[in-house]
Each structure stands twice: as C-alpha cells, then as structure tokens.
Image 1: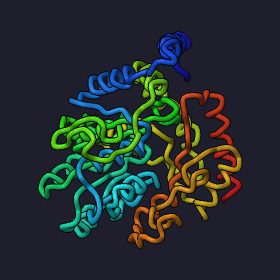
Image 2: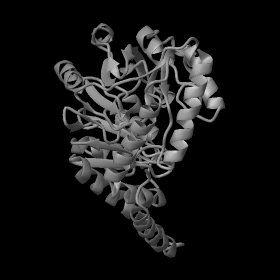
Image 3: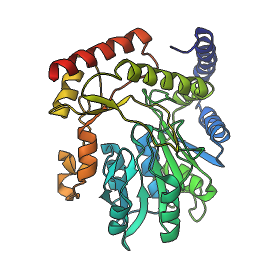
Image 4: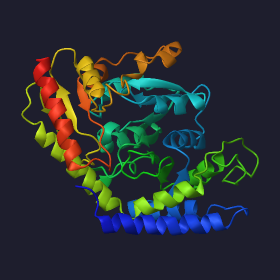
Amino acid sequence: MNPTTSTVAAMRATALGRMTELLDRSPDPVGDEHARAFEAELADRFGTAHAVALSSGTAALHAALAAYGIGDGDEVLVSGACVVMTLVAIRLTGAMPVLVDSANGELDFDDLAAKTNPRTKAVLPVHLAGRCADLARLTAYCADRGLRLIEDACQAQGTRYDGRWAGTFGDAGCFSAKDGKLLWSGEGGYILTDDGGFAARARSFATHGFLPAPGQPAGSRLGHNYRMPEPVAIIARGNLARFDELLALRRRQTRHLLDAVAHVPGLTPIQPDARLDWNGYAPLLRVELERPREFCARLAEQGVANSVGTYGLTTADRLPSLQNLGLSACPAARADLDTTLAVVVHEGHTEARLDEMARIITEEARQWR
C-alpha cells in the first residue's frame, strides 16, 4: 500500500544531502536556489510556462489575486463550498467574496450569471477533495466576460479534467503543499501559469515588492514575505520527483476504503464526473443517515478524521468569522456538504489502518441506523 522502501529511502537521501549542503553554508545567506529549481521542475512536470513557489496555499491565492490587481471595490465570485482560507485570501486584497451555489464540485452557472456584475473581476472555483467544476465551460464563461479565472486547486494535485491538469485551465492555478496534500512539504504552496508578466508580479508581491515586474519597478509596490523557505523547497523537490507514485498511492488508498464500506447501509460512494480523472484526494460518501453532521462528528471522536466532523467544514456564509460580510446563502452547497463524509487519508496510512477506519465507519453506521 505504501511507497516502496527503496523509493522513499532514495528521496530521503537526496533531501538530506541537499539539507546538509544548505546547513554547511551557515552563517552565509542561503539564497533561493532550491525554490527556483522547484519552480522549473513544477513547470516542466505540469506543462506550464511558469511556476511560482510560495510559503502556503493561502499565500498563493493572495499573491495571484493581488498580481492581477484585484482589490478594494472589486468582487470575486467563489464557490459556496470552500474552506475559510480561500475567503481570507480574497479579503486580504480588500475585495469582496460573492458566493456561488455549488454541489459536488460543480458550480451553478445560473447563479454564477445572476451574480456577475460590473464589479466582478474574477471567478475562483474551489476544487474541494480534488473534484472540479466544468472547467471548459467556466473558462469560456470568463473569457466572454473579460474575467480572470483563478483556480483554487490546493486539493486537486493530479486531477485531470478532459485530459488536462486541474489548475492549468485558468489564468492561474493555486496549490498547497501542506502535509496531507499529495505533493507535500510540511508547508508551502505554488502557482502554475502561462502568463509571464503575472508570474513576475506574483513573485515580486511575495518578496515585499523588491523584485521588478512589468510595469512595477523594484520597490514601487508593497508586498509580503511569501517566499518558500529553502528547507521546504528541498522537501518539495524530493516529493515532486516521486509524484506519480504518490498519486497512485492516494488513489489506491481511497479505492481500498471505499470498497471496504461499499455495502454499508446509509452510505453511498460519491462517483466523480465521467470527464474527471480524479486524484482520489479523499474517500467521499453520501451520508443518508439521520443527523449526518452529528454522524461525521461521531466518527471523528472514534478516530476517523473527516472534513465535517473534524474540521467543521460548512458553507462560508455559516462561518462565525465571516458573519459581518453578509454573504448569501448557498442551499445546494449547504445540503451537499452537510451530507458528505470526506475521510482524511494521507501517505502514512497503511492498509491495516484503512481497514480499521472502515470497521469503525461500518459499525457506527449500523448502530446509528
């Protein structure tokens, strides 16, 4: 079930060698050699012209929005089913998030059209659990209206839609490399794009504006310290080199758990769209039991981490920290999230641990009924 011992050992040996070399430079400045190498390797791996390495997925989203000049008075249309970090990135620019109803990753295009207005500057779909909206249709929608399409693909590493990598359809695709992601480095994030001017502006924004960019001489704009640290970049490079293996592992883990609970009454696997080559980010099940959120919380208490029960995932309009924004309700997204069991899996889960999780889910579901 887990990556081969030889592959993991080789990755660790390479990373340790690079880390030792880095430490041997002390107290001299370490520079950004590995962050820049990670960018080049990312662009080559996923077929984009540019990549920008950053300190987190949130930083990637914030830098992408800022690099396209989105700020005070602007609106960003965003999936109603999203995590709080997505909304934080929008608010950090001064722009206002406008929630668009969605279900199982798919945006409600009628709601999207109804909420598009002259203040709208970008659409930001969120690929929760690696599931995507109709990206071809969304790309055309944005192009027709002159809107930026910025993908929150933080959980969609390795997902393809119509044969194309998620995060490469829009003007920019934003990713997280936090632990638990398929391509992980403890922390960190990155942007994929074909827009060279945008990449330069995003990189400048991530270095306090000290780097020049088209139309922005060095020091002419304020920015943030969103650089990817060299130790993080070393780990990221090691895992990027074995990304195919990590992707295959996650898919096997998710398939194993879903097969183990396939016949449990009250739980039904949520199948991906036929056009989606899903990365298997998390086993997804429709909960048809009474009080589904309470059921998810019960599983979390029993050691089965999941998005609703462990992290309280819900629509953004119900988050206490965002109540002052008056965000519109998204009934389809709410019903979808309230009845979705998204089980957290990661590289360290053995087959035995997955079987134990399946046993707990099965017993709790039967008792719940």
